[in-house]
Length: 220
Image (cartoon, rainbow, N blue to C red; front, side, top):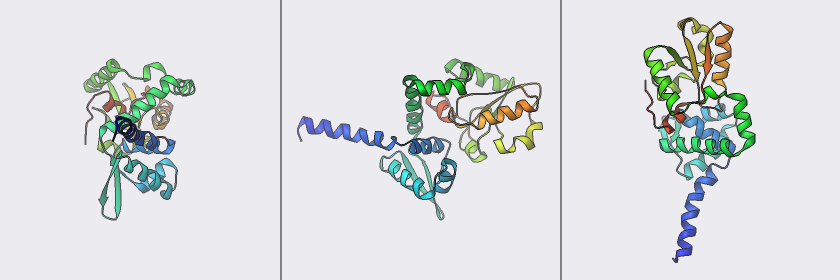
């Protein structure tokens, strides 16, 4: 093999990753799997596609070594092959937001500047939560919270907030987060909390963003 053939082979191998993440639905599946291990049935439901199509997308991701499988009885559970895959999704989205005006405008409409955390504000939020000055709630499903969550956050899935709202202190700020900036559950949670008179806000971060920033997660 000459040098040209070797270079072509190297680029071709890296391009396998690019091909695997070239589908919007496969990107969504990666974001969902960044929340924790899931079966194809759950992934299909959450990505609003049928099981056959979800399986096809997962096969592509597995061939690119971005996901792994584990048999759980009759079911096959999928998970990311490493935290770096979650970081890949975060980095792709960040680059897209930086360079694609359409995405930047859409994101600016969803999140105000204070809701997009940087290194300093992440540390500040963690310290406030540790002291109890703010209450951080994770509005994702409980299984995702159990797989890993922001430090000092409490689990309060979106569909349980109405029934459990009295668990939240009325004299402190409530900070809600979900799966990341493309997830709308935190916005729904904030609207519901404000209806009941709570001081509430959302943040763009999810667990994938937290890990990509080099910060630890807590586990149940």
